[in-house]
Length: 337
Image 1: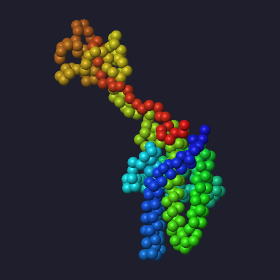
Image 2: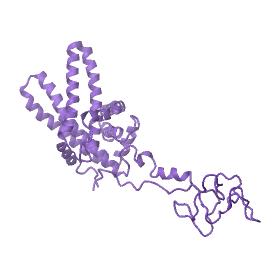
Image 3: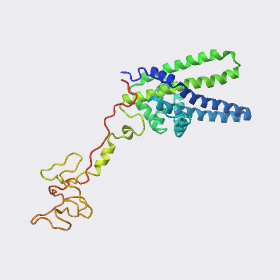
Image 4: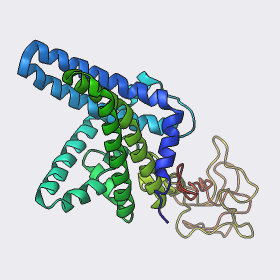
């Protein structure tokens, strides 16, 4: 089954539903980039143009992170982060997105120069590095392996989706160029840059982010950072809790009263303040019987040994706690039906 089946329709539905939200993010960033670059070029010539180019790179990396964060936000059907909150949430990822994007662009360009096919392969397997960073919490270098692992097994499906998105992009650029044909060349380039970026960038981010969610679900992995699979353990919390509460080696439960799972056995309660701990409990130096009051000797003729069975009515497994853990991961939001 193709996990990306219908992903373009889903992306288009979200694009139309939250059009104003996506457009406001991309338009503000593209407009600021274009205006600042133009002003720097007019004021400082070539140096200003170079500085504007650097600022435009920063803006584009911020835009990528912000749009992915916006898609993550609206998948529940509502907008929780406004423009300012979205940009603030995306800002910490700009460095990692910039580093990974630059390295990926260089690798893909080299692949295209060599035999074209290596470039297409790298483009396919590295197309999810931004969602891996912003949503999956990967670092710049880790995002390469994460993206490759996510695409693996579905490379042809991903490549077909990329081809369709590129064709849509080309068609939109042609239509926009025809509409702006009557304008002077300088104005045509400026408006085309802002408008095409504003309209197309959110759709590309939608497709990439939804593909990331679908493919991680297909692999049975957690998509977002902090979920059990992302931490590397399905029931780490339960394992950590049980590790400090395991009974001592060789200490069987009290006769006739096997302990229930996750609860102390017997009817006795843990000793109160000032009372000695029960038989075999942690903290008694010799594990001796303490059936009487504080300091009372054990039963005549009885010899207590470390790990001896506790008396009826005393807690058999001090410190034992109910087991805990996460249930099986069902693929998370976005998993195809």
